Structure formats: structure tokens, C-alpha cells
Length: 217
Ligand code: ZN
Image: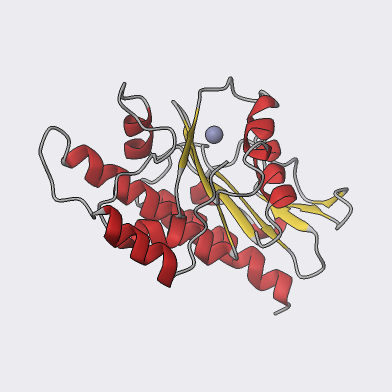
């Protein structure tokens, strides 16, 4: 099996796994990955994560021209914004995941640090997650908002919508977005209580040891 064929299988397998565990529902969610030749594979518009077909993924050449497959997701500008601003991005995943969306609409949601410092793993996989405001679906301003972060964040949360995460490859991006959703769930479970969060010193230590992107924009 060629490297691209394996990548196509992996995209569909991980999307199906997330769908089966309720991380995104219906025909929501989209995923893309860099191909070995510098092009892109993108999940088609209107498809369910539970039923992606490896042979029908939208295929773009390195110049950005579609050369094969079905029409890509309407949220393609979100994906492009990450690839254009983060040279290391090998994959981008977007979900409409329940707990992250719930946390994003609370009046005290924190734009600079969307996720509270509950576990080290969220920081290690996501860095700081920036909460972006609500945008109408398909609004090109979503891509502009991500570009405005100049590649300093690998994960953003779109208010009233869902998270978007870039990773070095498909597996890393999927693991990181699952960590985002799990942490949002923990944050909701702990709401109204006074949990022992990681201290600023503990967070600093993680940032230094794991060389976590902590960009201030
Ligand atoms: Zn969406």
C-alpha cells in the first residue's frame, strides 16, 4: 500500500473512531492532512465522520488545485489558515464536540486560555487554546481570525461552534482535539467547585520542559 493510501485509510479510521464515541455528530466535523508530495487530502462537504470513504477524499496538489475526489468541506478556509501560518502542521481536525461548545458559551469563558489548567496533558498537546468569537458558518472572516494569530496557536475554539486543532500528523491532531474535549468536560464537571488547579509554577515548568508554544499575540 502506498504512503498516500495508508494516509487515506488512517484519516477515515480516526474520523470513524471519533464519530463512534460521540465526539461529533451527524455530518459535522472535518479533517485534512498533508500528502507526501506536499498536497492535501480533505474530507468532503456534507459527509459524516462515521462514513468517510478513503477513495472520495478531496485531493489537492501542492499548488492548491483540486485534482481528485469530492468537493471539500465548506470549512476549508479554517484548514488553509492553519497550513498557511504553521509550517509544521501536517493535519488539521475540526469537531462540533459537545463539552467544548458548552464551555465556549459560558459568560465567564476566558479568551486567552480557554481551558483551565486541570491536567498537564492538555498543555503538552495543545499549548494555550485561544477562544475566538462566533462567526456565521462559511464566513471567510473565520480564516482571517486564525491567520491573525500568526501561527502562534495550534488549537483554537470557535465560540458556539467547535474546536479546531493542527498537529504534526493526523494522529497527533486527533489525540490533541480529544484532549481538548476531555478537558472541557472536566472543566464543566468541576464548575461551581474550588478544584486544585495546576499552579502557575507547575504550568511554567511544563512549558519549559516540553518546549510548548506559548505565544502571546
Ligand atoms: Zn464546524
